[in-house]
Image (cartoon, rainbow over all chains, first blue to last red; front, side):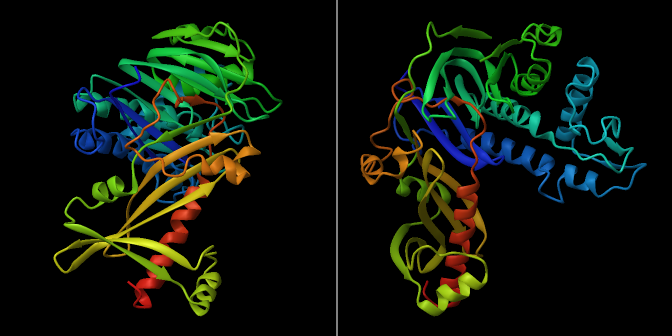
Length: 238
Length: 176
């Protein structure tokens, strides 16, 4: 699969986001007519960042944090989707997955597109799920532009689709360099580092679930956790 | 979903690299309406460097090569390329700044990753000199799809901020 792939990268989501697509004729990155597809993929990621960055007071997360307890704000559809997935995961995992990271697990609720802040102590970080969601949105954008195959990699939250089969490499944070892990096609893969050393990885059909389920695996320590199978995922401790 | 695991864990690769775009390609992407690009060099004097420093911007260098995107006599904007070093990585990137001084886009030109110590050695960095997108390193040959603790792009973000400040200062000072 070495020839005929065009790749671009931009700094987004606080990391390097790489997009690769099949370029049937090979050739120049600009002349190949893929600019619109690349542009749409990066725009999809940038939109997720604009909605869900906790560093941006104008994002939905920033606006949520400005709310007093008991009030709600209207959020964009992308944020509502991620919050619904986060709520389902929190429920299904018995609280292992928690976007408030312990600050107030019951301190928020999503109803339609209204995000309620139930507890002023609730501090939300969607970093454990939004990156995967952004990758999924970028893949949808590429497919809409007629890309037959490719991948999106947001700093290790990775998804391949169509004709792309990717080598998976794990970064060695102690010594540098990377280790070969396997190959992935038509699916997503994400890795998280454990605070005490070691890593967890999850392969899943979609990047949102791969990203979020690494947290469930990290906190449960159980690659056989039933939530993984429910979402068609496989987990690895290494 | 198809996942095939590697048979054995191999020793870490020593280094890998990806070339995305040349500076010229990035400039054309950022300013598709430009008829030509003029190379200039910003030379910041001591007073300007001090002003930048007062803004909390370390200019790092007094000399900054800039490409001016031109259409007729009009300047559509500026393209500045730079590189930053992280813990394991060397990233070169281009920043496109519109005529209004606002960042249009940031494109990564190339990415190099290594063992932590090698990246600080000039010899390791030199081996990549002159690489362009015309001689791309290929997926499968040179790796791309790293999964690991998230790589921080803080150095790039800081670099973009520095370039915006330098270009802004140069325009105010009539250097561009």
